[in-house]
Length: 288
Image (tube, rainbow, N blue to C red; front, side):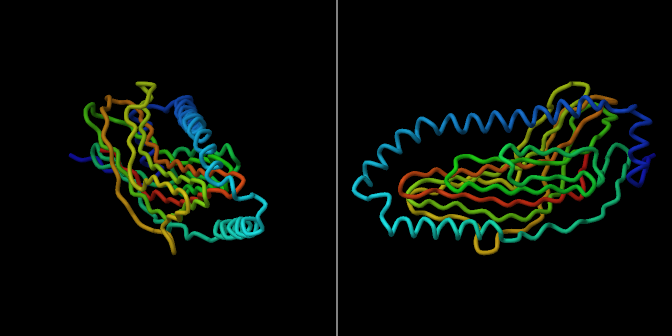
């Protein structure tokens, strides 16, 4: 006969009755590894671009060698572009609505809703990144106006007690809104977002699955291109999932998180610019 447990606190108590108290140190390890992943990815991105940028900069300057950087037309247009991009970054992005879903366990299927068990943010360049386990939301904002690579990431997590060993499904609904663009004024710009479902096994003391899901994109602009989801950005709701091998009576952390990276280089004649705003609400996660 199916066992039914309703309500956030009842579900929490029921799982701890069966599996005991989960280890807080396992959460610290998971968040530390996510932070290291983003930091190392940022370092690799910068290193990969360094040699290529050096070669292209020489070619770029050679092609434009007859154009003086102090040309009044260049100064005026670069200043105008910078004002446009800075103003665009101030445009308000509507946050996804908050939906109230009741936590529920039916037999070996758990539907879990906010408040979740933890939140995580990494924001090395002091741009915009916040997360709320209480509401199940996170928000990102990152921009580069010719000042290299800028990156932020954030997400939320819910624990799940696996009662039967075997293949497990981790799914979530993500309500989101985003506004992004990249623009090149004689230089280059890149725009990258990746949303991920990662599951950390506390018995395994390791990630048991790391999956990239939607919303995700990667875009680049060069020379005098301008790309983006103008004029009003995008809003939507998406259901995403991944699978992992679970162990009996073991705790798992289900992380829903997004990584955003903006890049733009610059030189005597102009700059590349890139901007991302991304808001997410996770009304429920599912383990089955």
